[in-house]
Image (cartoon, rainbow, N blue to C red; front, side, top):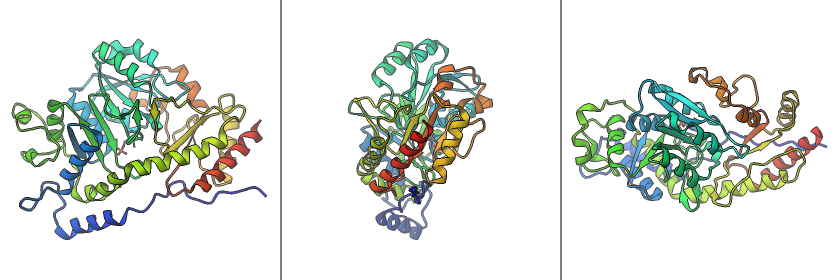
Length: 394
Ligand SMILES: *Cc1c(COP(=O)(O)O)cnc(C)c1O
């Protein structure tokens, strides 16, 4: 009898009870807007900003409406505007080129390697083409951050890190998001903390952060922030910075604060699950697991593998066979975007050029979520099914 997995790949854990209580307290107060505070009250949003900055070891933090909004805001704060070119890795999620397009800029796509990170040689070759890089740590894979910063610092490129999949991860002990000038996080349901929608932006740069705070829609209430620069950083720019509303509210912040307190434990639980599936897939002929360098402490909230020598038809059949056994995979080689999964050449507005190395990688790339509602035994069952179906291909 063939095993079938019956769990859901999109079912998250419930919101913790203390977070629910905090959210109910906000609703009982009626004060949901971040600047609606009682006398002497800090408010959930400011408290979250203070606590996240503290967790990250950053000087400043701003909570916003989404991860994509955080990237748009970082681009604007760094002065990117209409007609500018912005470097970004070709393997990422659609909100990244979307954020670049939203400020009227044009992405310059950089190749990715078989390890699913930005191709640093291609980045070095294209370094003269733009002043800003949005580095997307797609699916939690960190490139050699030391060499990346060397290339970018050498070429005068400002780095915005998209840490939607690396909240809690580290490169050589440094938290992901602490290398670039600004870093963006998402608290959307499928990321490492869940407030439905939401985003966080961190930086050590007072000028960039003051601009970001004003951009997010602070009116003249920026002194009510928990982790923003002092009033002197705002003085010269208040009248020149447009209000592009995208604040976070107290309800979401209330849900996130108790989750932040558990973040490291959650990250460890994800990686345990990743290792379980990885063990089942290791050593199968024709299946390549992306390398995970020693310097990278990743968060295994999803797993990727490559079946490089297979035709499109074979991969389609493989995905269907796994789906028939309850294992949901995403394939980056499909002609048309499906669900959340799209490929750089589907982003017609980004006018993508040819990226042969990326094409070869994405044609054989499979991707699977690992929600924390899966037990380790679930992961062994899933890994076993994948291993059997890959062997059946051979
Ligand atoms: C989810 C995601 C974003 C955007 O986050 P939202 O909060 O959904 O706007 C950006 N980059 C990557 C890689 C993502 O996965």
